[in-house]
Image (tube, rainbow, N blue to C red):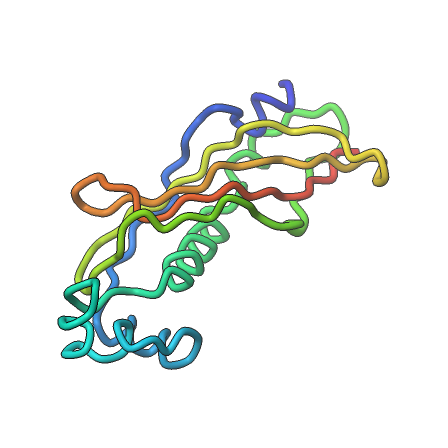
Length: 156
């Protein structure tokens, strides 16, 4: 099996769905992003959004939670070698984060990731950098978040 096959390059994986409940939106916002349209339903109705909506950071944090829950266990379980099973490490970051549409209270969002490419890391022999496209869509199919992320993977 090649590393491309192992990483499922070009294949979109559905990580799961999450319903953004009003009280959870407010609780997250009070703690991490206390803008009025995330914490006060009346003020949100009178805002540019026209209703209570989740913080973009709440949406991003939910992607991360579902990504970790989905893990790469399926890929690891099917590793036939050669060599040790690849080990997923930390992420060095992300880029091109966009929130093209608000996530309103009561909306269910489905989160995905697509492995795009991998390359060796010259400064860390035995490690590769795996790049991902990360996205989520509301119940109408509209994209609500997108970003590129990366993860370090030990392959030898």
